Length: 140
Image (cartoon, rainbow, N blue to C red; front, side, top):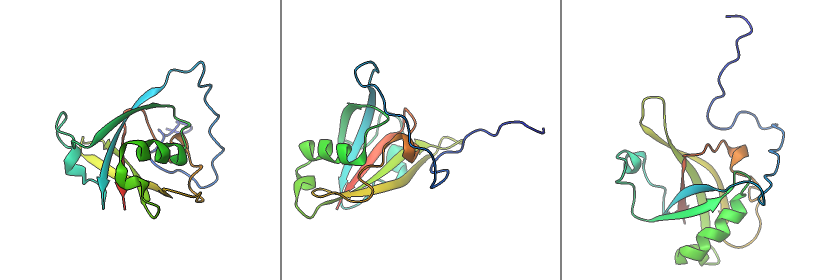
């Protein structure tokens, strides 16, 4: 059908998207972000396959869609001692079900425990986060 709008696709659409408008954190209710940490690598998609049997290393964070990877890095460092090492690198991935209900784990960025990198300012909304997605953090 001519002129019909296509539904938005998951993930990064373009490298030149306009920045997401900041959230008024005083007036906007935060969302619950389920964060799963693992030393050495990301969880595999099968780890999320059965609802209620997700990985045990879960941290629940209340945050907003404009939270940056640096902000999330600092929160993970509060609860995961391995993330506090000076040379620790954190790799972030979204875990979400595809159209058939199978989980996908998609890497979205990396930060260092200390120092600022070029990806530190990326925010959840710009990376394609949708409410209900899980955040998987590999601590290396």
